[in-house]
Image 1 (cartoon, rainbow, N blue to C red):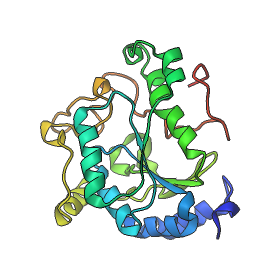
Image 2: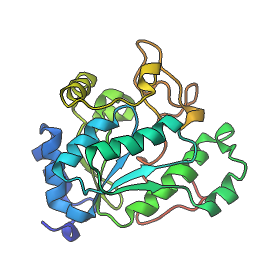
Image 3: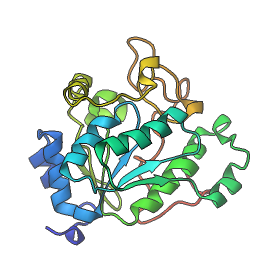
Length: 246
């Protein structure tokens, strides 16, 4: 079925989820690529667990566009890791998405918004750039897993959003599965992992985790916040305004 036959909320995503819910991640990626071709993108943070999905995707096709949200507040180690890992895996189309100058000038001219409103900061630096980039695609791939907890515990392998079909190939995998794959394929770890960072985002809102903590416990620690917003529902077909509801 061609990608232009896909409609948000169509039966295709439900059928694919039923067929792929117990499939190996590579099988999920192959099905996604066969269905959507050049209208498929992979969104990656090049974080603590990103190497596994990127390696699997590169084995399916190194030409799958990889969208990387460079918020302007990432750790230097993440930027180095993004460059080195992309080269090692032979990824040919990694796109650095940055916040628009006008958005920053309007909402965060002093780069201190994270101190007072983390939701608004994520909205300007992550949600808006990704929404704009995804306008050219019909489907995208995420690295979310159920073992991360919270709303992700019920994560399907294939789902629909307002304007896209979304694939979560690693939904079923555990931390042990990821670690085993890293070792088997000799993949390099993010440099901050050995310092206790289990989930890595922007430097102001990311901390190491304590033994026994959830994987994402170091993200927005102490706040009632577990997601940056890119996986939250928004109005169909709309790229939200900076001053809009977040």
